[in-house]
Image 1: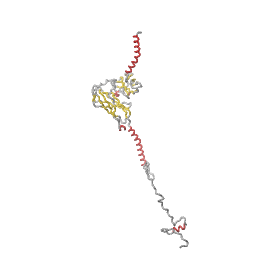
Image 2: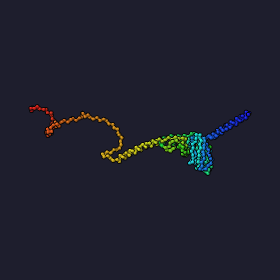
Image 3: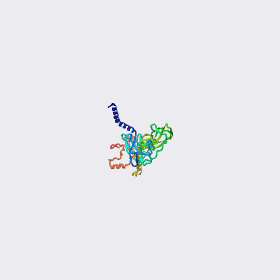
Image 4: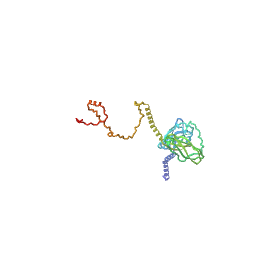
Length: 364
């Protein structure tokens, strides 16, 4: 076999071996980014289709919806208001970013053209659409896009401001959404109306229109500040979203602290109110109970009072003792009763008596 034939055979073998590898690489490259595939491109109401996808972030919660007046190139201009939200389904991607889920077919609130819209619920925004036709549903042409100006966020969004003492006691938390947009279109954008949405956890955002006064020329940019306010007592993980022209331009997480002042208030109420009720009850019982026989009525329970008592020095009994009473000369307990009677009947002499001296017998 000549050298040329051997080289050609070797090239053929290498082509056969490397062909599947090249094909696999091409498929992976084409599958970069989120994608959606449908088991059917058309179905009627009451049936179901299988929606599968790949290229999504792993362990991510997705929402599947059938939306009207939409095409993949323009997304969902009307937002979720143009989708059959009641029959939507949620699915979580696996460790490789793939999913598969049955989706019931239902008519959206607006005419077709329709798409199956798949979007992330939490985390970074990602979405993908697949063309789908609801059999028997009305079809109308899409409204013309007359806007020549298009806005795009140029810098990261931020929330300025902080909570105060009133917020600690349950006042509505408020911040200012700050961002810079640029006009990448071909005409001026005058007085644009943005939509600011606040979402708590995995719930859908609540949108509120926020107009901005000014004109952004083509190629120009502007710094915009929009107020954001939550309901009173709100706390937890929130997400602030910015939408313009039916597209979400940016999202900003917001961790709202718990209003501990409200908790402290209720703790004080639970302590003070029972104590006050106890005092009122004791006062009523003290008023209505009968008085004791001695006429003394206790006014209520009193705490023991501390009193400073000084020691009392009593005079000596020996120094101030009364002199003992002298025995009456005319009264002797051991004397004869008759003699005592004679002494008692004798006239009393108030003059002081003097001691008598015994007289000798025979003296005068």
